[in-house]
Every structure is written in C-alpha cells, then in structure tokens.
Length: 161
Image (cartoon, rainbow, N blue to C red; front, side, top):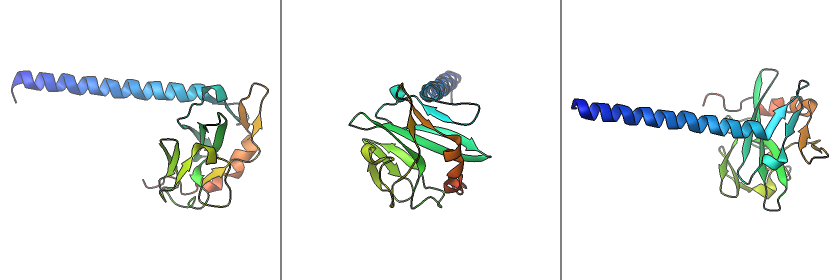
C-alpha cells in the first residue's frame, strides 16, 4: 500500500470512528431525556418524548440488569412493557428488537404491533408492567416495588450473548 493510500485509509477510519461515537452519544442523550429514575428507584417515562420507535430503558435492580420498552402506538398512546417475553423469559435471547410498527422477539421471532405492547397477557408477548400510574402531566410512573418484583423475569436475560 502506498503512503498516500495508507493516509487516506487512516483518515477514513478516523472519520467513521468519530461518526460512530457521535451517533452513540446522540442516541444516549435522546433516551436519557425520555426517562429518569428518582432516589427511591421509581421510574418516570416522559411520554411527550416517546415516538413510534421503541425506547429501551436500561435499569439495574439489586445488581440485576433489566429493561423497560416504551413505544407510541398508532392510537397515540404510549405503551410500556418489560423488555422480555412472557413465555421465553428464561432464555438469554428473550428480548425485543425494533421492527417497523412494533417489536420482534429475538428468541421466538414473533412480531408484536406497538398496540400489543403492554396489553396482551398469558402468552408469547412482551411482559406487561402492572401498576403503571400516569401523572397529571401524562408521564408514566413505574414504582421501584414493581420493578423489584419482576427482576426474576430477567434471570438469564442476555447472558452469554
């Protein structure tokens, strides 16, 4: 490789690396503005910041990783669920990825419309979050007690992947 080609290649790699870093920073910033936790561990989701693309909210409860997913459905309501499948929750790949109009389970491949997130029960679908409360501003609050009660659903979540 000539010296000029090497320099061009190095510049290209540097630019691509900066784009990846900038992209990751912007994504984190947007997600962080969509939610917050308080000192007691309660989660508040700012519904005005949730779009039709799912937002995945990472949490750590008693040292265990877990996630909440929030998405705006076509009826304009924000739906929330734990980012694990009711049936597949014991599997490491029992989590959802975004797909046009909803989410798809990485373990079983089932697709769920945004309208189904957090509403369907007793089957292969995103695990609903019980006890969701709305504030006067329309934000969604999930108590620390509810989060703690569902840590076991994430016992093998994303382990070994």
